[in-house]
Length: 476
Image 1 (cartoon, helix red, strand yellow):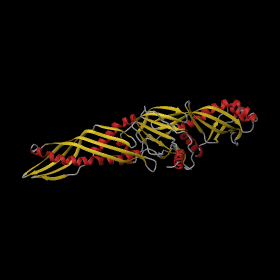
Image 2: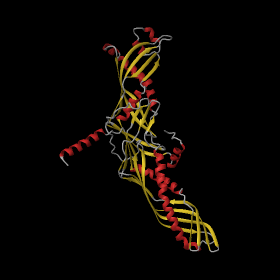
Image 3: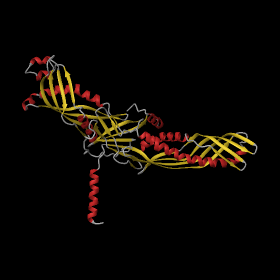
Image 4: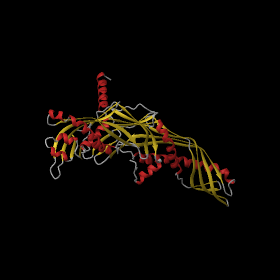
């Protein structure tokens, strides 16, 4: 390969890396998180295997004619493990376990007829199941394939009834057939559980959904999940959009969040783009104006010297954001910068409003990020506040005494309105029935990381059954 070809390949790979869309949201599930899933997964698999149905068996051996029917699994003793399978997905393994069955027999030998129950146990049960994880065409996490191998080392039968002891010698014949049939039923049951039922659970993760009447959010996967021996990492677009114009979105120039920790069960990383796209979408969606009335105050006294009669009338403050706010995340915390036009009007009874002043307001809010369940919320606090006159520099000087009273008024009136709205939060990409607990928020340059443990509010089967019945998670 010539030097020119090498240079072209290097340049193309560099361009591809440069053009790759960085994630606005990342999630890492660690082996500690997988440990929490083990008991729930084992219970789910036991429920699936206990529902195995086996066909009626008929046959004969010499002068014996037999029928076996009503096969039921009565007990499962599974020794199982769930772990990450690097570059593939998840491995569920069962070793040296047992399955207890009960079925009815009907046997004819010459002129003797006998029927009764058979208690059997499958021993040395081994199951090796690999779940292949990928993203589908919609950007949703799914199980794309299942590799399954199952084996039963031996099977024992205990007969009851009139000729129970007589038939012990044909037990090996019967149990060999039963072992073959049971072994053939295990993998299809697990394949159905993964490809159908667990994928139903994964469909409860929001991919592109409405947040409220103004904006939606896009949590589509940007690529297949990355699986190592200790973690499952997923890159999501993590972008809000205006419901009225879904194609008008920000370009993501934010840094790519880096998650290095493994101590918690789960880590959620959100870049500045995640928050900026939300601020941009709400601005474009029309949620950028606030009007409120105030009783006569020092503002009115200072602004109405040209007409003292107006002092007795209520004020109206009209606040309009003039450009999309921007977030900044540093190790010291997060903040949001806002530029507004602020109009102060007096409302004389029965008369048109009188504008006292029009000014530019530059505000900077401290932003505190929190998690509850699987909803991310933000609480704002006005930190810095400056006002400038839209008319003259001289009037800007005259407005300096108003900065304190205006800031207090905004803290009392406007900020609570905003926080009352933002406390509703937005759902993060987790399935129904699973919540964050014991959260810790860390601030980095350009992104935040929320480390947490996981909690199942209900079992996997209950979640799947709700999904199949059309019910939704009321906690969302």
